[in-house]
Length: 234
Length: 234
DNA sequence: CTTGACACTGAACATTTGTTCTGTTATTAT
DNA sequence: ATAATAACAGAACAAATGTTCAGTGTCAAG
Image (cartoon, rainbow over the protein chains, first blue to last red):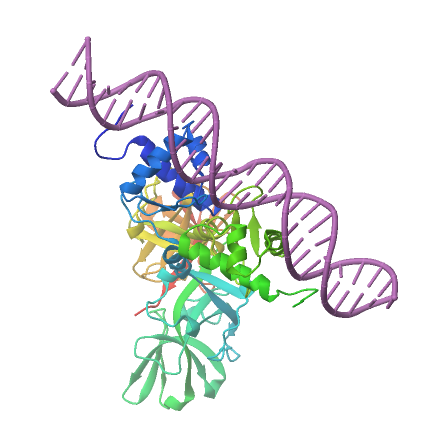
C-alpha cells in the first residue's frame, strides 16, 4: 500500500473523482472530512496530506482557511476540467430551444416571427442539440412550425412533423424553402431553383414532377428549411 | 429602503449576483459572511434572512449546516442558472448522445447493436434533446441509423435521413418498425399491423398501397422507429 | 394612535471545518 | 539489520461558518 515516487496512487485518483463527483452532485466542493468518508480515509490529516500533494502536482487548487476551498483543475487522466464558467456555458450552448410559433398548412400563410421576436416561452419550444443545426446560423433567426395535414407529402413531410426554419426572404438554388404562392394561395415546401428567369420548385420526392413558375413575383420565400423532425412516439 | 410584498428587492438581486459571481470566480459558493461583506450587509442574520427568502422563492437551494451550501437555481431575471446539481447534470440528462451504428439500406440487413452495447464514441453519435424522445425509454436501447438510398421513400424517409430506433423484436399495431423480410431479402420501414394471422405493412405515405404478408415468420422486426431527423444543411 | 408586518442589528452559540502536532506503521534503500 | 522516508492514525486546537434569538426601527393599515 505504498506508491512512492511519481504517479497518482489509487487514493489520489479516488480523491480527485470524489471532488469531481461531489461538486457535480451537490454544487459545492466537499470538505476534508467529507472527502475522507467518501474515500475511506479516517483521518483528516491524511486527506489534507493528499490534498497538499495534489495541489503541488497541479491537479487541484486550494484556498487556505476557506471551508471547501478546493478546485479541480485536472482530471485523474490529466484532462483539464472545465472550470465553472467555461464548462457550463459550453454545455448550455449545446442545447438550444427553438420557439414553436405555429402550424404550417398548405392552404394558409405560415406564421413567421418578426426579426425582433425574442420572447422566450419554454412551453412552446423545441429543444434541439446545437450539433444538429447548421453552424454559423443565427439562433434568433430560427423558428419551428408543426406541419398540419398531408399536403406536404411530396416534400417528404408528414402530418405532425416539426420543421425548423430559418427566416429569410431569398433562396439559393438547391435549398429547401417554404414558399407562399400568390396565385394559388398556397404554402408549400420545395427545393428551389432559379433558372433562366423562371422558378423551378422541385419536390423532395424524386418521383414527383417539379412545378415551373414563370413569374418569380408569384413566389414568396418565407424561410429556409433547416431541419425536419418526426416523432413516432405513442 | 423597503420593498414589501412580492418581487425581488435590490438586496435580493445583489445577493443573487454575488452568489453567481463568487461561484464563477472562486469555484465555490460564498459563505454567509462573505455575501454580507460583498453586499454591504453587516449582520449575518440578515443575510440568512434573505437567503431563506430566496430559497422559498425558488431562486436558491440551501443545505443546512453545510458551509457554503448554497446553490443558485434561478437568476435575478428568473432565468434558470446552470448550477452543478440542478444544472449541469440535469442539462446532461436533457441532451443524450445516441450511437450512430451504421446505415439502413433496403437491400441489406440493418445493423442492430447488441443489448450489452455500451461503448461510447462521441464521434459517431447523434445528439438529441431528451424532450424529443419518448419518455420512459431506456436510453441504452436506442441507436441511430443513416438512411442510404431512396428506397424508403414510401416511408417518407429520405436518403441521408437519420432514424432513431429502439431495439425490440416485437411490434405493436400502429408502430412504425424496421423490418427484415426474409423472403425478399429486404429491409423496410413500415407501420405494422397484425390482423387475423397476417401482417399488414402500411407505408407512411397514405397514397401507397400496403403489403400483406400471410406468413408472419417472414417478418423480422428489427426495431421501432422513434424519431426521424432530416438535416437540410448545406 | 395602535398594531402588526417587515427590515434590520448585534451578539451569542453550536457546528463544521481547516490546521497542526505527536506518534505509529509500512516500505525502501544501504 | 538499520536507517530513512513515506503513509497513516488520532487527537487537539483554532478558525470559519451556520443558526438562533432578543431587541430596534420603519411604515402602512385599521
